[in-house]
Length: 507
Image (spheres, rainbow, N blue to C red):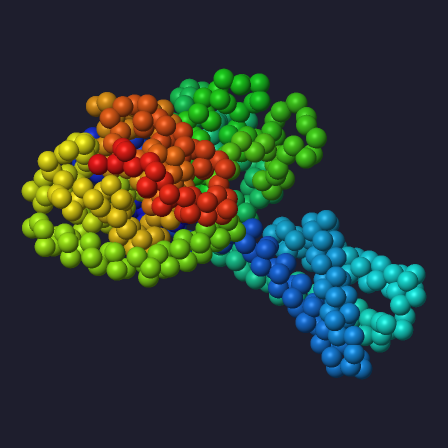
């Protein structure tokens, strides 16, 4: 999940409004007050569960093999290692089948320990039965197996006690709460809020309500939760303060209203759930996920979250460091050429939209004459543009001018792969990009990148027509919906090829 400085985010957002003076902000006083509150750092429940599983399995394996090393005669180490790993794997699978690896389960005592010991007993019973059935008593030490069973049970109890303590402490500190807003009002929202407070208060931090209705059906406060504005204000609100979850509280029968809400909200990098707590239409249990005890339908998920964020972060850093080392001679030569052939700085810094529309400063090698620099990109570079220097023509054609953005990657502002960040005033057919393409800002649901799916398909360079920017956006949205590390690797490998084969639009 993302974390921003609320005050800085509000200032940046105001700077993007017409005139840049903040007068375009639509946040109500109540919404602005919440947005300005300090935001505590939170932890990903998925990552906690994943780490807990790995640590538990490793501890069991160390214990089992350690008992073998201490009490069993030397020989057949490979066989014992295989049995140990098999038992640990089977235990992990069993614990997951009984949902013993859940944040909510970690908080319990009796229910948690009962499931854990039941799985451990079952796995050991199956191993014992297999030894008897396959007449492998001479191969497996009964002392080892019995000792591991008893000490393993004790280890699991102690481990789960420690895990429960940590989860409870993080819960009390608010580290495991998801910042949540409700869309909708009236009686439906009131029932939803009460159910969340009764069953998910330790997981959910309710920030407020957003509803387009302003009549008796949607009062200013529902179940003690204030209305913060219309749904359009929610989009602005979620860009200046962290929001993890949006729950739409509307009847499933209100199809048009639900679709209108989703059309507005899908540009945000948040989880969107449609509450089914008041619906008479029932689905199978597998159709629902749950917020506490409230059944919800998953309408949209953050494209890259939890472990995938960790994997992408590691990928970005490794690729960026490797590229800086390998390409440093080219970057040094480019800097020298720029300095020798034209007056002015080597680098050009430009404000662009980053993740969730946050403003970031992008580094580039300067490719234009200093007196002709256009920080807002109000006029796009065209073929034979007199503003571009001789060196600039070459580095723009080969995208060498983009290499300093490797430092943006190391700073965490960019990814190696993602939708390209566009200049704030960039236009297609005299229309700003977000005016020309509906749903344009949906491409900001992930961190922007140095290269992307659109670029390797030739959609780079000048965007003088609406069709060109639409093609870019469509390719960016395809990337977001189909992201994987393998896709990132493919794009990185294909980028040099595309620079040679598809550079006709780069000036």
